[in-house]
Length: 416
Image (cartoon, rainbow, N blue to C red):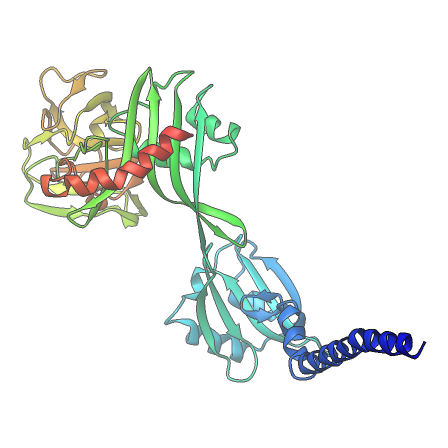
């Protein structure tokens, strides 16, 4: 009997003693972690404060508005009972970073107010554009600073089939419609987007920019594929000679260059402007072209291949003029011509460098000159600032790098 009790005691000891040691070890571990480390765990799992323009949102009352017609900095700040002296001080202090006279109707502005009984306005924030905003401190030192919102660039792919237009194809496939403009510029010289047909389809790899989860546009197209009337067109963005251009799978450029100027001229007498004083009308109005001073009768040439869409007399003051559509993106216009070259008629095709007319002073002109204009996607652009993409093929010494570079892009296009 005693032997049995002894054996039982030994067995129980073998079980209980390790159990006690284990429990003590756990308690020590628990103490080790709960005392010095517990606060770290709490901080780690606390949610980050919500920020607005870099300020902690919960620290203020927030009022947001949109600039109305005829509002300016003074009228906006006076609503918050900011004194004229302070308004003048802030306007002067903002000059190095932003001219407050350029505050525009429709842009958003925000007041951050103290959480006190008076709801004192502390900061005024004006959104200059999609990315930039102005911060004015309305108390204390009255500092003024300009900041940029964080832009997130997301790489995306998209594809679609044409049912009516490229624009509609983007919307039908939940793509940013502005991507249609980017593709039309990539393929401006190879695909006539006014002649695309039902059944044509595209694929594209691109970057889209976002601020606060809202798209602010397409930042760049990396590669694209377009099937037009059964013909395949690849496009890959590649840099050579410090300029980006688009090339096909064999390294041939998809783009063509314009002539630097459509004539031999003596000087530029007037530049592109949104507010030029007209020498005859004696009023200020936009001048969306470049005036090249030249002797009457100086030959004028087409800056690129294209089709003449208009030829005749502009009753609005342009006199004799010619309009040439080069592709789905670019159109050039030649104004105040003395006359037209032989065989130049509306509907004709012209080649780059082909004689189309002669410098004159027809219409509202004080002397002989050519008023030369360029439209990009229907909007006037400064002819002197039209970017000249590389038109030469990929150089031989870069060809192996180019083929290696496009290999993965082409494979990605082919797979979706």
